[in-house]
Amino acid sequence: MNFDLTTAASGVPALFSPDPSTARRTLEFFTADIRNANTRRAYARAGADFAGWCSERGLTDLSDVEPVHVATYVEQLKLAPPSIKQRLAALRRLFDWLVVGQVIPTNPATSVRGPRYSSRKGKTPVLSAEEVRELVDSIDPSTPIGLRDRALIGLMVYTFARVGAAVQMRADDVYVQRRRTWVRLHEKGGKLHEMPCHHNLEDYIDAYLEAAPPSESNGYLFRTAAGRRGALSAGPMRQADVHRMICRRVEAAGIRTQIGCHSFRATGITEYLKNGGRLEIAQQMANHESSRTTGLYDRRGDQIKLDEVERIAI
Image (cartoon, rainbow, N blue to C red):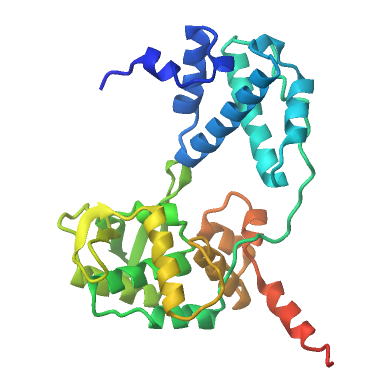
């Protein structure tokens, strides 16, 4: 397929496309420098929003953008602190790319400070071990869809897998090594992360693959279906499909906690740590760069708070 620069550049905001060379350099930032699709979308939104803000104020030339403009833009954002910091990080990185490409002489976002934000606990809702068991037991394992959903939920709980990594899995990403079943996860940044299966997960995956194997050895592991009892297709589930499935299963199980795909990752980490697991090992299992990130998933303190609240004997 031929790449038409003129067509592609037409989608670049005017601030970043005053001439073909600047438009090309901007496009290269989003195509060559950023490999993660989610990051690319988030940074593109940040760049487009800033360009629109500048246009409304008569700023049409990149060389006229100064730190005061970036600071004023950041100040007026009506977003949560983490989102503001992400916007600022996107602008810093984009402007750095343009500086290296000799489009502008200096980065106007470098000296701008974002809002202070520190969190020792993440916001992802988690389930208790009992709720996870109720959820899994409520799934009918007599259908291919039931077996698929049970295996997928089990994968996210027992391997701390991100949903994005789970839906990318192929059948040959499940393999036997040292008499145990292992899984190969395709994580962010193209990294491969291998994990041995918990015995429950091993049973779930074996039952699923025996009842509904992919038509090809390298076919997608978790596939879509036509209807709730229909045969599985060859196409992969998307993250939105998994989210809808989880909402449907949670409602059917009578669980009132409002959870999402990431909740199983947080639940698995919390239960591992509750049962004597070490934070540094949880970090390796979750494939986190920092143990601080893993610590955000640790909700053991929630149980302490609940126990203490009951001491208010009124």
